[in-house]
Amino acid sequence: MGVVVWSGDAVLLVRRAQAPRKGQWSIPGGMQEVGETAKQAGIREVFEETGIEIAIDGLVDVVDLILPDAAGRVRTHYTLIDFHGHSVREEATPSPGDDADAARWVRIDALDKYKLWPETRRVIDASWGLRNVRAE
Image 1 (cartoon, rainbow, N blue to C red):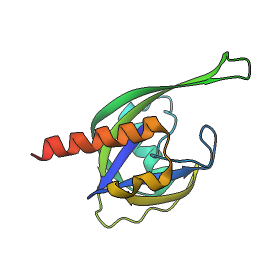
Image 2 (image 1 turned 180 degrees about the horizontal axis):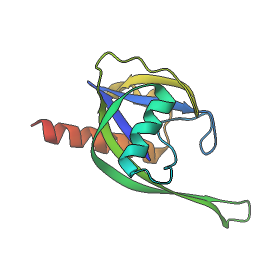
Image 3 (image 1 turned 45 degrees about the vertical axis):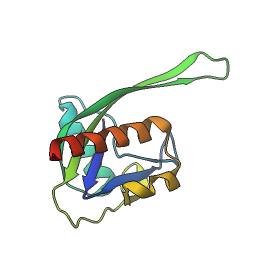
């Protein structure tokens, strides 16, 4: 589960400390535990990786991450369910933990500096659009 978390016009990003995408900036998220709903997993993962308490507002998209081996055969296949939500405390300061070695709020107009995986950027942009549609 991944969650695009908003506080005003800033999105919560983490720098991955583990594979896949180790060392890259992304939205917080991780694996669902047995007995958890997808939303519960997203809320827990965001808190474990950033210390930020959130509420889920809706589903953004489902993304497949298929990683081949050197011969081009599928080595790993992740199905990523991406929600969007918001911080329940407006002035919350993220603190990296669990599978992240850094966490920060990034204004939507500064995202290009973070060299995000194109699917991550697409999901963030889609979430931004959903926020603005609902605000009207």
